[in-house]
Length: 265
Image (cartoon, rainbow, N blue to C red; front, side):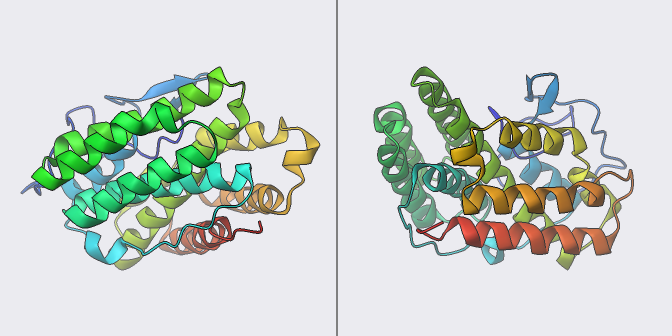
């Protein structure tokens, strides 16, 4: 996104520190986006935005959404997906104001970028993430995470690795959706569930997978993701997404994120 970009934001809001708003919005308008980009006429918001919306709705326990990840470097498609999930983890750690975790993630981003040949494109961003996290400059940490994602995608495109760039985005969306549905499982709200209503974005990802060459599309991991995305599609099409559908989406995305962590995928 960028692709992956994960989430949706009210046009009223700008990127902010993790401070909580006193009054939640009366309604979330998903028809307009402040920082979203477009790919093939599909609106693709930035990852930081989903967390801001959730903070406006309530006060999620972001520390409870963090995870410890042992990086397992496998094939290039798995690394690209894993990189997307790790960048998404960075936003969760920012919301939790966990300096050490954010710094660890900054180093992980650099390691994974190096494993797919784009280390130089994120070296400055990674160093900046670590430096700004050490100072507690959360606004600019978010900006650097967004920038790192875009820099990786641009570098991959320059290397004619657009398919891997899409996988970085997809990995980020899966992890971001896993976190979102985890939060909603614990405190369901219609406004929060509206954030899952992204049928065009999911169709875009499905289309990108369909266009991949067979040697990539038919790998066990990519084929598993393709099949599970088809399960998600009908769950997020309704204007009002039920608590039961949220729970099903969480199970699917959680399973896929775990699969991405497996080196031999």
